[in-house]
Amino acid sequence: MSDGDAGAQDPSDGHLSPADAFAEWAASEPVPLDRAALAIAAHCRTDAVDEAAALAELDRLGAAVREPVPEAVIGLLFGDEGFGPNRGRFADPANSYLDLVVSRRLGIPITLAVVTIEVARRAGLELHGVGMPGHFLVGTPDAG
Image 1 (spheres, rainbow, N blue to C red):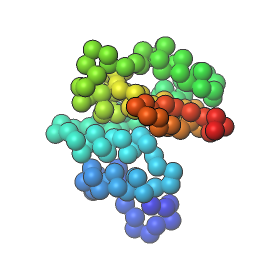
Image 2: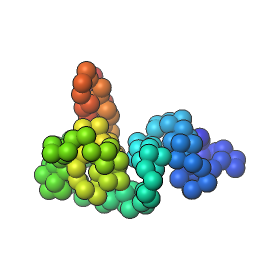
Image 3: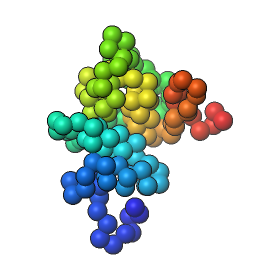
């Protein structure tokens, strides 16, 4: 969906089902990971997903990054803000829902990576996901 689409709906405006909203976000270029992950959470759960609160917290975290370098983002999230893996209940579905990961500060590697990428983006730093066998990492564009 481009900004110039006449009459195009914003997938987050509540008029689309979560699955349709995800399809719209996934077709965007670049894909807004935060919005797509929140659409997945809304699709998979029966309780309400507070997208606005999750996005506001990601915005707050992005504004709190002292310098747009990976070390500052990682230090803020996994140091100051206390994000980390839910080692005690790794298989808990809540670890996969971006809004709950943001509010609880616990997740699995892929959702923690989404938080990292999105906070970095808000701070002016481009990071991206790197799929590895059995792992999901975060890298910089110049890391090859």
